[in-house]
Amino acid sequence: METRIAACSCGRLRLNCAGEPASVSLCHCRECQRRTGSSYGIAAFYEREKVSISGEFRDYVRQSDSGYKVTQHFCPHCGGTVFWEPERKPQMLAVAVGAFADPGFPAPAKQVYTEHRPAWLTLPDLI
Image (cartoon, rainbow, N blue to C red; front, side, top):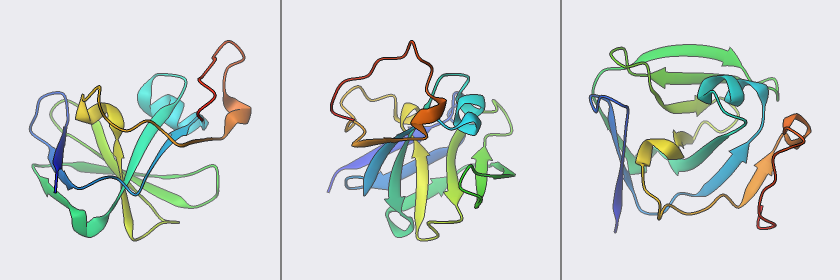
């Protein structure tokens, strides 16, 4: 079984994720835009038992657009948000796809909150 490693910018917070993600989703919600500083965020959802975490992290709890809480975990040294826990999916951890820095990572299969997607942003028909 393949293991992928996600890490923050300084490398002190690391996740070992076993196997393939259960799903990969591109999110245009305003909070993902703020979290990433981009027009969207991309999350790989893994079952909790398939992820091992090493390193120190801090938490930030926020409301999601769906009304559920999301606990974001970030590195206290570089500030990178590497993973988060969506209250509406308690069995899963969401990992920032960019934290894998892997151009071969599986593409998103869906996109959500497209009503917040900028009009100038075009994406492949796959999602």
